[in-house]
Length: 154
Image (cartoon, rainbow, N blue to C red; front, side, top):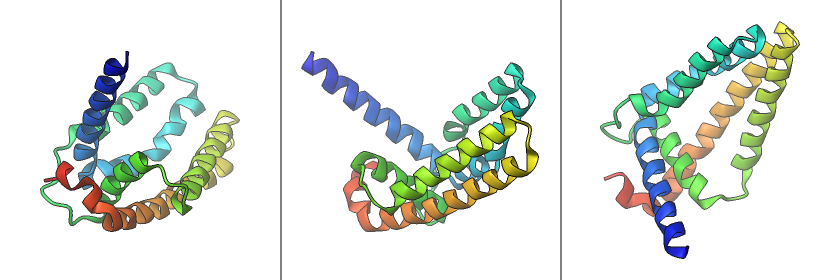
């Protein structure tokens, strides 16, 4: 049982590393951020077909782009910082910002369900702005803790 858990943990870590290696490509990070409002479409239209299309996009986005050539881009450092942050699980300002962004996203979904465009749009804008703040915190986290993942990104 314990051996199986350890093997599962190692497999999950390799999978996480593979996803973040590609998602740290700025094209992946920025295209995902720019399409965040698309999540509201299937809720607004109540269309399963739309939900499938949006779900496929968000599932494929982190892996369709190649790993970046270097770590110079801000979005790359933010995504790599997020990977380190997820592993460390600190209870810091980034956790609060991430929770606020999630809350704004939920408000946007409820407003979309009620077909209220102004609250849905305002909450989506708030979510996207909070995500940029979160990315900045993740980029800083990466700069401060990059040695913890040194072997991962070589």
